[in-house]
Image 1 (cartoon, rainbow, N blue to C red):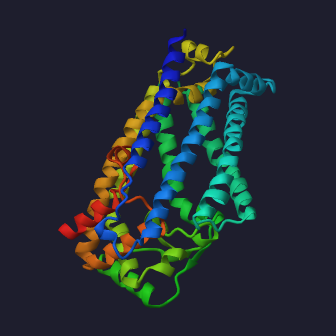
Image 2 (tube, one colour; image 1 turned 180 degrees about the vertical axis):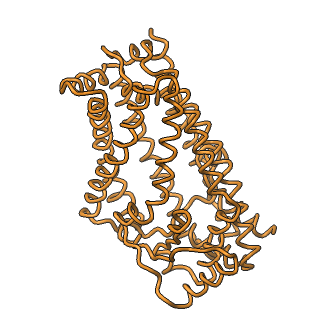
Image 3 (cartoon, helix red, strand yellow; image 1 turned 90 degrees about the vertical axis):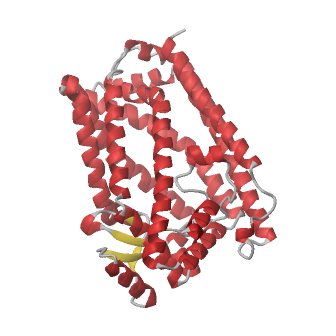
Length: 410
């Protein structure tokens, strides 16, 4: 049997089994007794509801992963990629148009497969637990906008990678690395003003106590912002959050309208102080630098597998191509990508503690910050007792109980 096929099947099945084990342990780690820290925030009924939410989400995701893994395995074993490649080549176009047809066909198929799962999650699961506010019209428009945006951005990046590997020889991976990283940085700058408004409305925060408190704190920290906006997140969900976006003059604060409804001024400023802490501690720059580094590693390894005959034989391909190499390489790169993901999550959890520390040290209202974290946890029915293995693989933030304890220790 083809060695590449053995490796790819092992990776796919291994990832699936690992996920199964982690999710099983995470559900078993659910504590029946409400942690003392949350007495008065969670009542018995709502705490039980949060556990049911985790269980049903876990079961749903495992069913979804099982179905998709079986489809992918079958598609590989019956030579599905070769069928798509013959379809793309039937138009007798150049390497880039043919590659775009090949990629678009596969990505569209993946998107269509995901729609039934998205429908169930949005209109059944999230609806059951009181989160969903998405209308069917908004749901469809989101899909259409996502497809168009993905086609434009993905098409540009995919075409550039094909051109570099076709025209620039052994140094193609470096040109791809620099080109893709530069384009990703460009997207960070334009996302707040071009991309995000396609999906949500960002309304400047009205003059009042909240805006004044935020601006006063930002001035005290010498933190310049382009604007403070309220985002109409309630169009899709009752869940609450806040985030910063952009760099330089495009830097903005976005508050979910659902967050503003549920948090006091001190609690909201504490949350924003935490986000400002990320900037002040240069976490954003460090995260971008790590992403650029991992891009370089990925493109270098990719260059070693471009049009590899053995790899193409594993997928029963009749002809080799640069564009198909990109997809096939993705299967081999999955374990390395997982390692980078684990490293990134580990660093992210450390930085969350640092940002919490910054918020408490500069705003000086630890009780308000703790209340804010508790409210967010309860409102989103978040898991209070995740299994350590689940945290290790999937959590970009420390478990809330550990965050609260760290804040108290300050």
